[in-house]
Amino acid sequence: MISSQEFKTICRMIKELETRLDDRLDGFGRKFIGMLQGFSILDPDKQTMTSREVCEQYGVSERKLCDMRKNGEIPFTKHGTAKNSKITYRVADVAEVFASRD
Image (cartoon, rainbow, N blue to C red; front, top):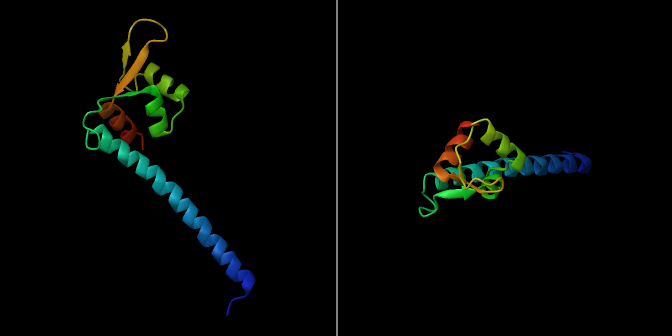
């Protein structure tokens, strides 16, 4: 028979494992949904994403996304010549880039 202290320890360990598993599955879920969207499975009308949408969906900072653009790691379209012109990304390209990073 186990003591109440041992039982509490086991319960705490199970809860910790559950939390870790939930975190990993949540991250996988975001990536999987992103891939489905990238191949126009979830939203066939959505062809492009903004920088903010890419950052939110794939969990990268705006600085990292900017570095990826500068290094040629991710294709993008700049709409205009001004410094603050809108930048968009093809959904399929984004999904491919982030799928190959893992």
